[in-house]
Length: 71
Image (cartoon, rainbow, N blue to C red; front, side):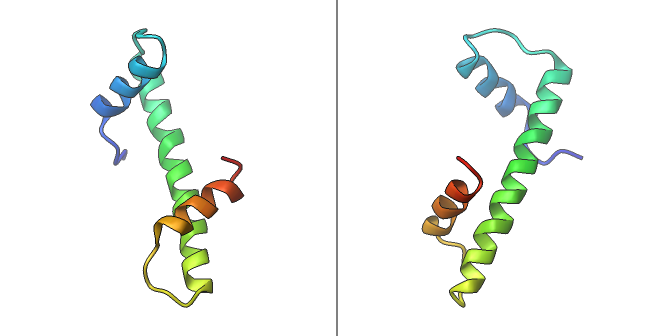
């Protein structure tokens, strides 16, 4: 089950997609893709925090994880 709100994702798709409408299946797919990316980002950031012997993910961990994931 999706954890991200469909309404928010739909708004982002419209805002960054030229104000076009999105089908419900496109919104669901975007949610799935976003959740998968966030999961990979969190895993990478968590590994970086653990490597530094911390129990907290910091903004620098997120930024480094984003770079490592190609973003």
